[in-house]
Image (cartoon, rainbow, N blue to C red; front, side, top):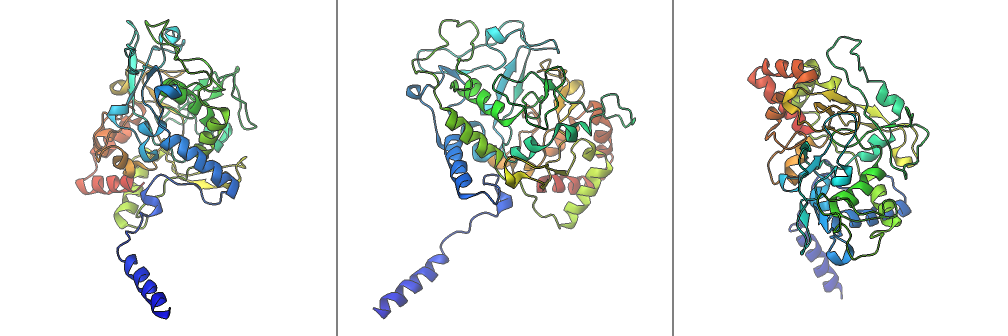
Length: 401
């Protein structure tokens, strides 16, 4: 018997040499915030399965018009999407509202189940391409108060620095329940998510994505999305709602408790110098590095420092990034400052290549910087004036995020 125990021990030790080590926590985007209770961990897992593993079929209510058959298709590994999953938003060219909502707006369903033909953009509608963003760290951003966000707004550029960020006030859906930190203005609320900051919270984002991206109804939104030129074909043969309120809540909890992306090589001298340059050329005025959450309904989100590199505000990015389409009170050339955390991991979910900016047009970090205009024109010019070595340090820093 003793030899069997000894043999098993040798096998275990030997096998350890053949078991590959898992990636470091800061090398992947997926994973929960530390400190969840057992019950919260179970809900996180249920949300993870619904988000990443559940693939809808026609028997489950897919479509009949859709963009993707699952959440994970657009956000592989909880990271950025690829041009294959890029969304097309259409219908609004100014702040007066989208006049194409009854003709399929605001999202194009460019795929369809057998027996149906994909939707097309109505004549006269402006449109823009939106690359799906990474979804990690959303709970930290949602936890911030309106007061915190407004503290960085300067719509009239009163400090004269050329930067005039402002919030996008949105008409929230009927199922939105304001929390203590929401400060409505004329019945509208500050948008925090989306390329144009047109989404108030993670619940609105989740419900909208199920409906607009997959064609799946829920207790929060029982109607199928309108589709241009197909008024009699919008309903499928699966009873509504096609997912339960419990599933939506699990996905929302999952998204709110995904960990924040962690920086890599923070002590590297090149990274440290790159961070200094990032601040010296004023990138940090919009891509604000550090925030602290207030008390949250989810304790692990309460009073935590985090580093998203965003101000969640709209900024004029110049004519080069004006697609002629907008949402809410944003102008066509205005875009929400995208968080930079996880930037260096973007290629992992994008097929090994970068597809940056709102529509994926920039194929490198350098190119994305050079396409900045408007309020960022001064920083772009200062980037051009850096030496080659300094540019390398700055890019090394951004890739460490």
